[in-house]
Length: 383
Image (cartoon, rainbow, N blue to C red; front, side, top):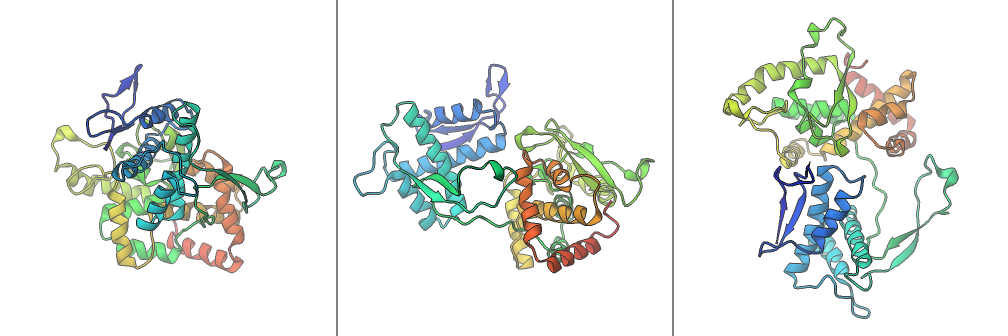
C-alpha cells in the first residue's frame, strides 16, 4: 500500500488537483472506500480547499489503513463483546508503541471517526465501532459565551484519548536572541527572523517569493524604522486555505532580505541551470527551494545547539503574543486583536483570542519584562 500525491496532470472538469492524496494498493488499485471518502470530503467541502490539508488528510488515513493491512485486520469488522475495536487497537498502538502525543493521536482519530460516520451513511458498515460519551468541558469563555447552551458538556467518541488543553508555546526574548546567535547559516537566520517578525507559517516562509523583496532605500515613501506592508497572494506562494493577507515587515529586515537576495541567493541560484530558476526567495546551497520536511531538520539541529525546545510554530506564537502585548502597551488606535488576526491570517478572531487569554494570564511583571526584552532585541525595528 502506498500514498501518492497527484501531480499537475490530475485535472477534473478543468480544475487541477495537484497534491491530491491517492491511496493505492500493491496491485495498483485504489484503496476503497477510503479513496472515495477522501474525494467526497476534500472536494465537496468548501472549508477543505488547501492542498496542505489534503496532504494531512491523506497521510492520516493512509496511516490507519496501513496499520490495518500490516496486522491483517478488517476495518469493517464489528468488535467482539467486551473486546477493543480496530480503532481502539490503532489508538493504543499509536500512543503506546509509537509514543505519539495525545493531541496528535486524537487529530488522526477525528478523521477516522469522520470516515466511519461517512461509511455508515453510505451503507459500507452496519454500525460504528465506537460509542459516544457525554463529557465535561473546561473551555475558557469565548466571544459567544453568552449564547452557549452546552452548560459545560460535550459529546465525544469513546475512541478519543483524554487530553489537556494545550498551552501556547512561545519563545522569550532571551531565547530568540540565543537562537539568532546559534544560527550560522545566513539563510536559516533570515527565515527565522522573518517568521518571528511577521507571523509567517513555515510553508509560507519556504515559498516566500523573491518578487516581494526590494531595496527600501530607493523608495522615497519609506523611512528607516518603519514597517513595510506586503500583500501575500496564493498565486505567488503557498498560503493556508489560499487566503490572501497582508503582513508588515520592518524596514531593516527588508533591507537585509534585499542584500541576501543580491548576494547569497544569487550565488546559490547559479548552481542550477538557468532554465530552472526558482521563484522563492530562500534557496538551499544546491539552489533548490526548501522542501516539505526541510524545516524539521533545520529546527532539530537548532534545538541541539541551544538546548531548549524550538519549533517553527513557536515563532508564529511568539509573533502573536509579542505583537498583541506591544499594541496594547502603545495604545494602538485600532483593535489590537483584529490587527493580529489579519496579520496571521486567522479565519476567526476566536482563534486569535488565545493570545489574549495568554497575555491576560501571564504575571504582570513577566509581561512587562517580556515587552522590555523584545523592545531591546528589536530596537529601532518597530513602527
